[in-house]
Image (cartoon, rainbow over all chains, first blue to last red; front, top):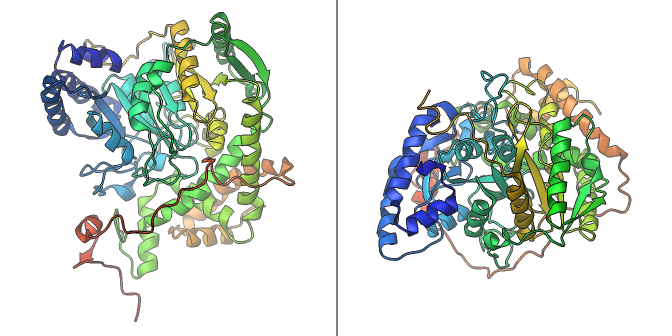
Length: 496
Length: 95
């Protein structure tokens, strides 16, 4: 089936005229139609636009055009502004918002010929680890537990719709954003690959802001090489984002074939969390054994402030969010709820427009930035953040990359971890430190747990050395030979 | 530090989020649970450490101070909940 192809293989097939871009997109549009009512991975489906883009791609292919993503259908996280296509950020408050401009990352993908199938579901304003906070309904993970096949599992979050779309084979690849783990954790839960590149590698212009010092765009795909192809198109300097890095974008796909011989791979001892399931610990050891067998040297390292990463994150991110989300006031765009005066208009609009988790984080952020508490919370958190960065800098003086588990569990069921906000936050314990330090990190599927659910390993690299991250991830991918398929996918459901 | 109901009302007011009286107690419990967990940062010795404001370890670029965009009132106002001519409309603020 065309929906089973990797992005690289689909690209080669289009170049050889084995099938047309229209056929490839039609197969994905059909898959969206068949499976999206179950998965709820896309909030907005743009089938007509996708087919028009595919027809344009066929004409371009016929004239010898060889742009890197020509005719390849993708899903776009609904946090990227897309000109003329509603962009909700998973929130009621942006329900009626139709951007008059295109984000830089999606503009880069369109420049390279990509086809957009629709806008992928997410936790509201990218705040969450389960996709349960979306105002547009929960996303269903295409994977099922072997023992408990009736349980509906979450895809992780916040980029849960993007991950479910790629795992469920309704898109060849997808964009995501990662603030504290929002690409890596859903990639792990859905058995696909995903990379958060170095902060500054991709422009944030036109991405609905959550925490500006942490937010970074990155791709999801079913292989490491596909992620490398997508990232090369997404990345690059943008004068419209003063934090985007003005440095050349390497050929990431070429780095996938480098191998790991001679690399020094660090094992941070602080990631050995209490209560980590035995099968995750075993998979981690297996990953290290694979890399050792391929010629890497395994080195024990210490990241002493790891345990403070999450608490630091839950000051810094809500603080930045409370500031960024101040713009949703019911005046210039988005939802408006009427009030007797301007203040009531603001308060009613924001009460109606924000969901519970967003409200909680805006309140926490407002508190830690308020007079009298700024030094005790926000300033202290920024200092601990400096120590977390120093941990990574010290470790990367000894090793080329780090290997850790991506998440402390496999995908959990809808409704689990919902009673206590802190229990949900703990999902990001292994992903948050790399976010705080701004370094690149990737999740690659490495095995299944006892219930048949995918588990990912995380590779963390030096700033702007995504190439080594891709090299290590590709080596693990080759050794793991991960070929398990989710229960919900085109064909499988039709046969039921 | 533990938040009381008055502080929760004050934060909500600063954040311009309307919160019903029946929601205050639940919010107070949740926020205190999060803040209690965050207190662990007090264990860390941060003496002499400079705060890290962001992950982009580079100097911000300068650009020429010129207008690069604008002149598109219809684009700017296209998503306005209420507009009058080239203006956003809000409830009367000056008596």
